[in-house]
Amino acid sequence: MYEKKIPKDFSCGISITFEIIGGKWKPCLIDSISRGIRRPAELAKKHPLASKRVLNLQLKELEAYGVVKKVIYPVLPPKVEYFLTEVGESLLPLVNMMENWGSDLSSKYKIIVGND
Image (cartoon, rainbow, N blue to C red; front, side, top):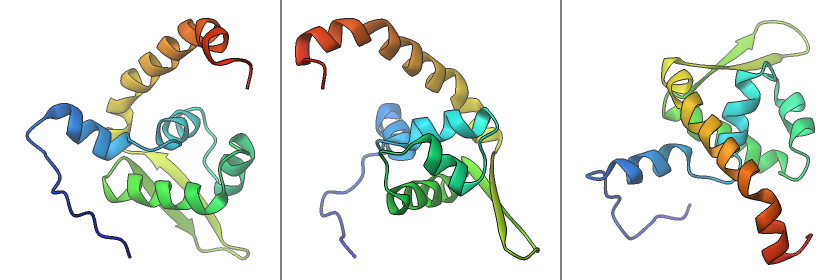
């Protein structure tokens, strides 16, 4: 496994925030889970551009930081759901602000970089 050679700087709140929610899909996953999309297959369907491997990795990281809680139900076939914790709920205003900011700039951004 790859080890980062540069130590993490936790003296800055922004660094801590990005350590926890930095990742292409983490804010999207937090938003989706808050809207009731909780099962891994549903999350993959909601975010088709993300590979299942990346989604699982980022969900695992969010779980490690206490942002989401993974619940495994003892049924066959196995059923897994993710729920936001108190920490995850506290991130919703930030995620919503990111969504609004991005939406406000989306038309300008498309003009700058094209319609890709």
